[in-house]
Image 1 (cartoon, rainbow, N blue to C red):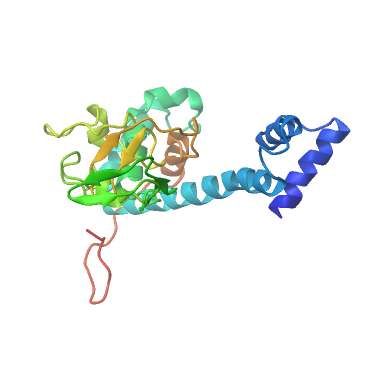
Image 2 (image 1 turned 180 degrees about the horizontal axis):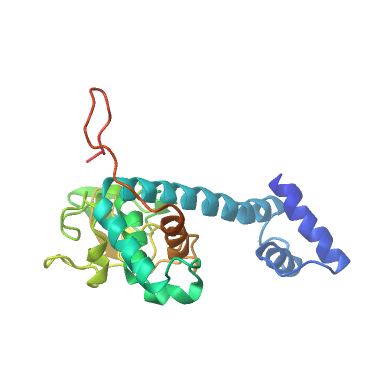
Length: 247
């Protein structure tokens, strides 16, 4: 299917009616250098954007519903901000986003609290021999970062298993915790700007290439959900055999 979709774009280019797109750009670059990317690579490179954007966003929204149900105080705070800034007579728009700091903080906390790529997403490889805590890491070793442990490191996130959006309203700091090294306050979209040693929960700065964009749920999605449906707390009386939130 992905190959067919990529081929359709190439056919449109030949007819002169292909709109601007990532796929079109890759085909045009291949014209000047056929060995740069194979047809299969073009198909899967462009198709991966659909998979990465749809699954991650939907999974994060499910985590958001879980958080709003289990932490009704947060839902009430976000609802209050929406009522005050947007009101109940219209839906939020992009122009409202700068005026919704708490809703933006809720999104960041959702991405930290329940990261989609718990093992750090795309594997990396060490560019040279390295040593960490007595472990020898040869050049070319495949490295997976334990993003769950990194996002729940008490060095950066006090009460890390609790849902506390306020930590992102104070430059990522709560009660004197060290600020998380990444500018977003989390690494939900991969190892942007970091190298993670395989046996640590501490991110280390490095010079890594990364895509300048990432599919992410926006405060508009969150705000629209709260505006239309609100949020109510769950019945927290546990029954035998009922799973609790993992800690």
